[in-house]
Length: 118
Length: 116
Figure 1 (cartoon, rainbow over the protein chains, first blue to last red):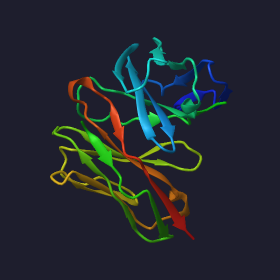
Figure 2 (cartoon, rainbow over the protein chains, first blue to last red):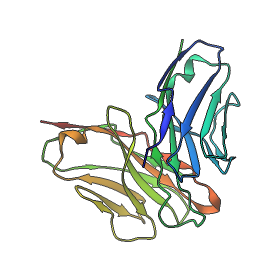
Figure 3 (tube, rainbow over the protein chains, first blue to last red):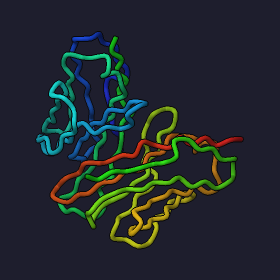
Figure 4 (cartoon, helix red, strand yellow):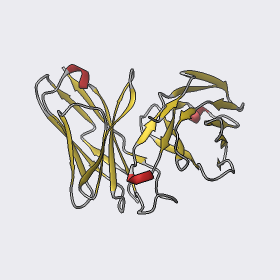
């Protein structure tokens, strides 16, 4: 079974531009979460999508947005890029079963997209 | 609010020896999950081990085992017979599925270096 894939792997943008990152989850996984990873802040939760709906949102400004498609693929968008947005953006998918317990709660991560804002 | 604390930013261990990484968390919930993830220098995050809070038995995966102390809210990872390939950043994570919230809380990570 193919793992989580993210495109592009590397991206260089300038301040003020916008960027769209893509994530394809593991087949059968319905939940996709996005994280921002920086050396100083560690892993910060951005948002989670399940069944094309945003279910959870972290403490990020409105410049960060996302969506999920019917095939569970997800995109995140950052508008009006700032230097501080330079980071590794990780996508993670999980099965997210209907019941709260049991297997399927673990997340599987993609390789990430390294975004550099100049 | 739930928090996860990893108090050891960096650790090193000699090859073939045993090392323990610490993790503490804070929550008022009773039903939750704990995970250890490994992120090697290639940056792909890999699940190492998971523990359900309702299970008293500590999880084990080959050379990796946890010491789960629910009352103390402690979840340490023990790596036995350390190998060079264990060199990585290790993250402890907490997840509470109550009310459909699948938000993961990660610690700041412990950078582990295995020395030859």
